[in-house]
Image 1 (cartoon, rainbow, N blue to C red):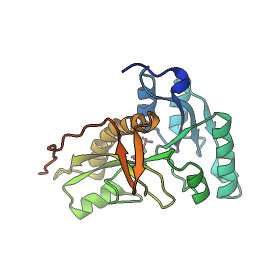
Image 2 (cartoon, rainbow, N blue to C red):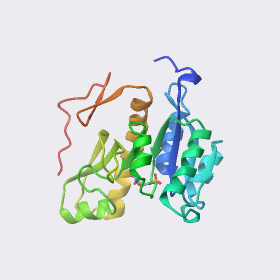
Image 3 (cartoon, rainbow, N blue to C red):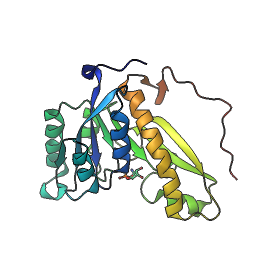
Length: 221
Ligand code: GRF
């Protein structure tokens, strides 16, 4: 595949609230010359988010907007929007961003706003996904990358990865196994979105030029 010209690479912002390991996986992918996106901004609602220092260390512009300093969700989002505008952002990736977004913001970014969630959606929306999966005794768990819809952890699914749940798993060991797959599928999903390979039809994401092994299966135990 020939490398996209710099002008054709989509300008991406990553929104974080914490350590930013998914952010780091996206930055690493975008450092490859043939990747169709560049990470032009990392924005956090928490000035103490560990990921901000990581991003700065990789030479990426960062913005910290402490949501507690804003009178309302709307004024906080207006400040976010102006940071996104001034960095000419075309795609926004949520990566452990712990603020609910208003329908106005989500609709403004419709089809260009992507999130990663540590469960096989539509199962286990919300928090504590690994604890809940263990409590339910599921044998297979995983993670999802999806376009963001106004409802929490909803929207057309772009990519998913499944992992087995082991008898001696704790929420932490299961989280570690899922996180390794998050780091694999988020860069893959952003590549599909940024290259224009995805389209949404009747709530499903269809991907041009992707072949999936129809016989592949994860069986657990
Ligand atoms: C990840 O598990 C992600 O799926 C969830 O929040 C966590 C963020 O972790 N939305 P990190 O900051 O990317 O390490």
